[in-house]
Structure formats: C-alpha cells, structure tokens
Image 1 (tube, rainbow, N blue to C red):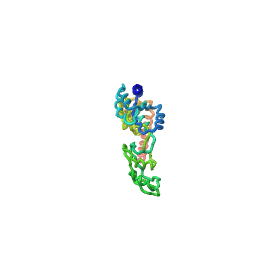
Image 2 (spheres, rainbow, N blue to C red):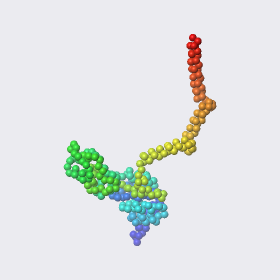
Image 3 (cartoon, rainbow, N blue to C red):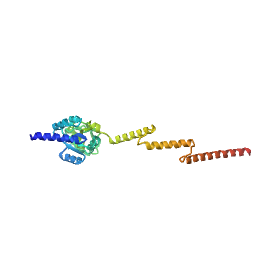
Image 4 (cartoon, rainbow, N blue to C red):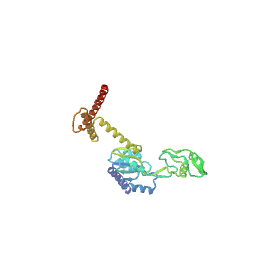
Length: 289
C-alpha cells in the first residue's frame, strides 16, 4: 500500500513539473560519477531542475499529463535517463550543458561521443613495450630523437563506436581524455515541438552572422522598394531629403537648403565664363598685333 502511494505521489509531482516549466528535456545520466552529479545539480540550481525516477513512472506521468504532445519524449526514456525542467529555450539549454562538460579518460566499453583522432607528433614516451600497445590500437609510430612519435594523424574510433580495451589503454598512455562528463540532451519539448540533439547543435557565431546578413539584405530590399518600417523610416526620410535637394539644385529651385550650393555652382560657372572670356580676349589681342 505504501509503495502504491509513493508511486502515485511521484507521478503527480512529475505532472506538476510538466505544467510548471515551459521546456522539458530528457537527458542521459550515463556514467556520471556521484560527486560530479552533485556539482552539476548545484550549478543548475537556479537554471534547471533534474528529476530522475523509474522509467515506468516517468512514462505514466507523460501518458496522464494534460500537457500536449509530450509522447515524443517517451522513446528517449532508455538507459539512465532523467527529466530536466527549465525556462531556458532548448538551444540555450543544449549549448549550456555542452559548454559545462568536463574531459575524462576513456574506458573500455565507452561509446565515443565523436571521432577520436590521435594527432601526429612526438609523444614524450621512451621506446619500449609502449610501441606495441600503440600499434595494437591502430596508431602508426616511429622512433625519432629517442622518443616514440606518431607518424600521422590516426583516427582510432569513430563517433558512436565502442572503445576497445587496446584503444582505451593507448589513449590513457598518451594522456588523451576524449570522453565528456556531463548531462547529454536526448530530446527537448517546447510548445508541443520535440527537438532532437541534431536540431539543437548549431554554431552560434555562424548563426549570428547569418541573422546579421539576413537583416542587412532585408533592410536593403525594403529601402530599395521604399517599404516603410520602424527600422528604415529614418533612412528613407534621409534619402528622400537628399533626392529632393538634388532635384531642387538641378532645377535651380532656390530654398534655404539649396541656396548656398546654387551660389557655389553659379560662382563656379561665372569663373568658368570669365576664364573663357579672358582666353578669347587674349586670342583677339594676338590677332590684332
């Protein structure tokens, strides 16, 4: 009876969290040590809430919730999954969690988070049994200046592949830490839409540049089409004033804004005419003499 009450209470609390937060994610807790998890919770305390429960109860809470279109999160509730509740938008949440991961050595059986490549160059390791261990991991080596050197960049594991014992040992020997400790987003819900990690994995600098470029093109188009908006009205008025002034000057229409320019133009014309008259007088004088 007590167990049944606990389960019911757990489901109700999850449903309340669904209704309280505008963004709900499913995150992986795979191989996150206890101390690091506590640090993550502490760091997120004013940004997001993590809630892990039995998957059957998590799915039951989704099924009985009044929040629409949460069902897409259920298929992500595999392994060591947990809910993460936040008011951050999905892109910011994903970026924040990625930026706050820490590096860790690889263990046999780990799944590579991305392609793992050993760079070419010196290793600082003396020749000996280490050569065989590196070669067993598919790393081509040579001896140069009394140390083992990696001949060329060597991809030892592709993203999503399991890391073998030989590769894990070689990476540890080289001091490489290809694994990441931290929360990994599996899926995020917002306003009835489900975002997958690939949807959220964006280059912020590139995205920002594209927005700036799009804004500039839209601004130029609206100005050329003389389509008035809050953003371009000042520039359109400035352009219209410049065109009106130019037209007034070309038609020699005198206003407070054009009088100085018209006087300058006329003065230039007078000086040009005087110069031609002087030249003509000089030619006439030469002819008479």
